[in-house]
Structure formats: structure tokens, C-alpha cells
Length: 308
Ligand SMILES: [Fe+2]
Image (tube, rainbow, N blue to C red; front, side):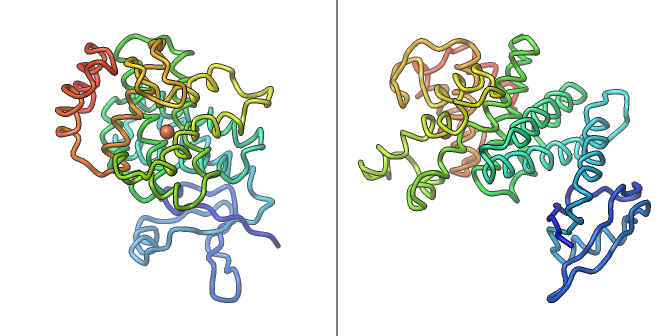
């Protein structure tokens, strides 16, 4: 039998599982929960305390597992449910982490792209049900790799800020999807350059900087010939590091649409907070001075409000 890993964090206590769940022992997989049974809170807490991060499903149960994930994502987006903010955020983070990680591994998979658009809808729905989800997402995504963490954080922030300034719903979905996938091209770079994602720009050697500046184009190349990828998503990915001053990269363009500017501004803020680990209030304080020509002042002020 073939097995697929699933994140422990995606499994909710006291819900009937529509799939078999296995635990990996040194030499074999052991059936842990049978389809139709549930996991009680104590057993779930026990697994967490043992730092178990992944469990396994038989590969032919993947569709059943997806159905289970869809069901909990729908609950996280349902404003009439009394789900705690922290649970909504956790479901959004899990769904987005699964989809971005899947796209990183299989950039040519239509299914991986569609699961990312589904994760984007989940982020927007959960924010609509409870805007406080944003704060919890930034706390929770910390267990992921920096690229995945930054994808989830930026996407959630884009969803929140775009709604705040009145962008229409269809455009927000495109923007959140672009934010999730904007940096996938970094994985095509040499590992040494990839690691520079968590270093300040002024510490980059000129050669490394030139390579790093290519990453929006590299991300675009992974999707540009795919008929199922929205051209608007591609356009937003290509400009996610641009600035209105013309000091961004890769094309130093100075005319940005509101949607492009929001994705770029949220990416810039998130780089400081998520990749460089700086304090949000400090980052905003610095941006309000240093980035005045780079982004619209009103947009900076709205960003300040939503991350408070
Ligand atoms: Fe980027």
C-alpha cells in the first residue's frame, strides 16, 4: 500500500474521519484511526506533545481526505458558525500551507494551482467571517518554511487590506492567489541565494542580488504557458517587488495599479516582519518614513490600521 503524509494540524478532534489514518513506526505503518472513527482531544494533544507533525493516509484515500479538508474550510468561512478565531486561522493556514507546498513540488499540476485558488477563497472567507483571523495567521504560520510562511502571511494581509480599501471581491481573489504563489520561483535559484530571503538586502553581494532580482520572472515562468492560470495572477506576481518610485525590481516600473500596489506593499511589509523577524510596529514606523515615495501614503496609513 502507498501512503501520503498529512499534517497533524489539519486533523480536528471529535470529527468523524472519512479516511483511514496511519502512524509511521520505524519499519511499518500502523493503522491509528479507522475510517468513520474520530480522534478525541486527549489523544490529539498527546500526539502534539510528542511533536508528531505528520500522519499518513493510504494514497487511495486522498479524495476522501480532500473532502474532509473542504468541509472544515467551509466551516472556517461560515460567519454564522461560532468557531473561535484561532481555529479559523489554523484551518486557513493548514489549507494554504498544503496548497503552496504542493505547488512548489508540482508547479505543472493544474490540481495544485486550483487548490491554491481554493486556499485563497478560504483566506478571504475566514477574514470575512472574522477579520481578527489576520493576527492569528501571523502567529501560526511560524512552523512552515520561510517561503510558505511568507506566502500565507502576505496573502492574508493582502486579503485584509484589499477589503479595507474597497477592492471588489473577484479582484481580491486574484490578488490573494498571486500573493500565495509570488515567490515560488525562488526555489529555482541556487540554495545559497534561496537562503538570502531571510537576510537584509544590503548584505547581498552584487552577483547574488542580480540573481535574486530575477525571482518574480522565475515564478512567472512556472505558470505563464498554463491556460488555467489567470493572466491577472501572472501580472501581479511579476510586479510584486516593484515600487511607485521606480526603485523596485525586476523592471523598475513606476506605474502600478491599486491591486499591484497592494500586493507589492504587503510583500514589502511581510518581508521585514516574517523573513527578517522585525517587530510590526517598528516596521510600520520605518515604512511611514522610508517608503513614502514607494507607495501611496493613504495605503500606508490603511496598512498601519489593519496590522495594529
Ligand atoms: Fe518576492
